[in-house]
Length: 412
Image (cartoon, rainbow, N blue to C red; front, side):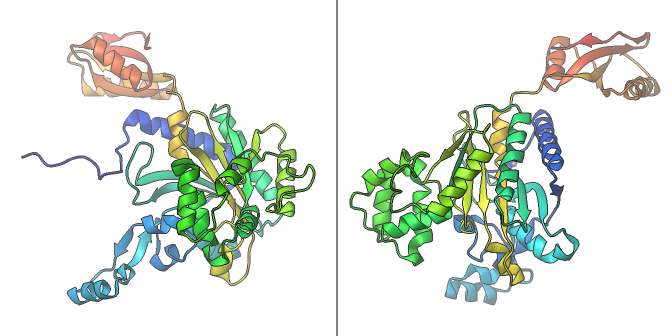
């Protein structure tokens, strides 16, 4: 019986054409962010389990993969089961995002880094998601972060750089949605939500797009929030827009935070920026400005982030301001068109008995001319072979026989 050969559920094999597309996009992203002054870093895929479960990762902590300790005994398993504490069995975990590892990276290496550090970090992350279209258990993130800058210029740099990335990738009609956790905190205060339930209430509000107003109101009621008239309040908040300082500001508005958002919008006049007082961003570590970028062709945001001034203090014992943005790489890739054929990529079809050294010499001649080259045995179904080569991005084909090499023939 043949063995199961599919990848693990929620994970994917990436075929050559798709891999090439992803690498081209990554090259664009890296180039733009580097030109904006961000330096690329790399951190391990594994972090200490206590750090990943320190309460700053929101619901993603529940989705993290743990790595069992080496040398566990049956007694260890029984002890962990008796106290219902699986963390007794694990000392490491796979990262579920790039922000927590970056904070640890900065705490470890701060002496070798500038006072204001602009980091670019890309790589795979893992979450035990329920697999579905567009949601995987292993996926790539592209993050930029500015550590050590408390002023709004940090947010401006992040949004300006990311807007340039979006333009360089050829994506139009994007919208930046922004809010501030200080506004959300004030809003929940006016609803009578106790401070110890604030984070839970935000997690519920973050589900608004998925379960609707009625679902959010019902879940808030289960969490002890007084919800009388809350449905109508949601409706008015959804249309609040940018006119909240015209006349008497609403009681729930943090005027200082809202003023910061107005200044942010004024500094980016070319961007389409919307104020959304219901924007939450699920991570528990956000402390100030939060933002998302949406695209009409995507089912959700294609990136987001915010200010997380409290995180580094947990590792350093002193506060360091920080703000970051994560580009939703998988969703961005889904929006990109297929790349045109590479006119400098040529396939050499070997037809008949051609000595190996002749084949290699022909290939080396193409490489010396600056072209990508592949040797491939000519098939009987030449049309199908040429279509396949065109689909793989080759722009031309030449036929190599014992009599010599044909002139290039364009593909596609």
